[in-house]
Image 1 (cartoon, rainbow, N blue to C red):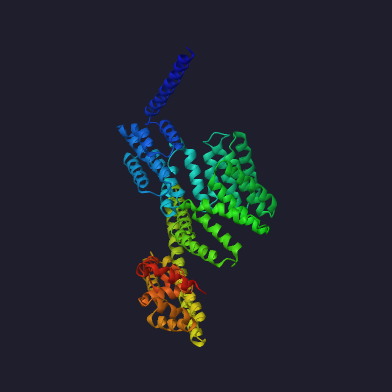
Image 2: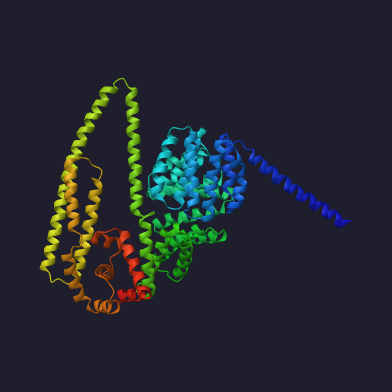
Length: 570
């Protein structure tokens, strides 16, 4: 009898579970996708979904089967998020579905969906460090938000918070305004608002305003403890450690970071543990307490190596390890330096300084354009609009003429200086006893001048002025004179052989099949020139240098490792 009763109870429990599961699915399927509230409820329900694309498609099938355009857009966008979570990297399936959702929202001409789909794609690009792609989309989304009432936006708190992230990335203090705006649409207290308070504190910290930074870190900490968010609490401890370090209170900073790492390990927050470990290692090195630094860096390095978008952190880990080695283990140091070169080349094309500087320029340019449009609209409303507009036009033309002459004069002066520097350095080289060190210095000087010339050419790249075009042509001619000519190469080769006779003989003896083009790469490699510097000197692209190395590796086969042993042997 007791056994039967248990079976009946179990039956009712299972029945209730199935019933309520179906009821939940029915509610989700019948959500009003035509309203912003309905759309938000579907998005929020998918934010915490697991990494299972088959189950995801089943959950979203009601959107795909729906005849409504909004449902279709939501389906593509959420499916893209699912693939991103599953693959955990840039992937073609996410890319296709993100772009499809944006395209369909534009066709529908629905501002709320246009903003949200672009923002959804932007988060994906931001997370995987695709900064070049990200910035134009974010600027466009910001424009649309300026023209849309927040009450008509989907999840406005997430939208403004993300704009804060972007502006803080380029160290723009307007980020604080976006963060504060996002808090107007958040529940307080909550983990979300604690995170925003923490982000505001970081903005003040980057601006060296330590008092305000600590104020917001303390507010964030109080709120995190109030809502029981231990993960946020751990991150705040690490951020407060930065302030103590800045003030020179290193021991308190170490204490906070150890607490941060403890909580990060406890709750398996790998990313936060990695950042805290790197900072802890730096401070311990300042305190000359190196007992456990290598162990801390090994753990941080393992986390940094697990994701391609952690490579900036991996670079920090390697640099710290090299500072500890100080030549005591040449073999390990060589491996670390090779790894560092690869990371530098990767960062140069993703989230490196060059890309971020260009992104910062784009944002400043957009700000200027927005300010100009605002002034123009205000003038159109005034009675004296015509006179003021003509005055501004005259001032603009006058300023343009002044700027043009100033730019032209500066370009000429720089060109003459660069030419004089080149002639002076070549004269010094001729007067000196031409050894390989002198040639190496000469080539390094050429590399610097090539970079300067390329930057100057970039400044006047889009000009249509005939005079500036003439200046551009002269700069291009100067650039060509800095490239490695046959005459320069032959002179350089002679001095290289004189200085490195044993190395050259070993190369020719072991690799008789090498061509002159191969020797150029090998000799420059021996002198520690990187791919970028080689491409400058030889007048080719970085990709051409890489392909040349790949062809050399294929040609030499098993002997390729021997080649690098000879190159690296001092």
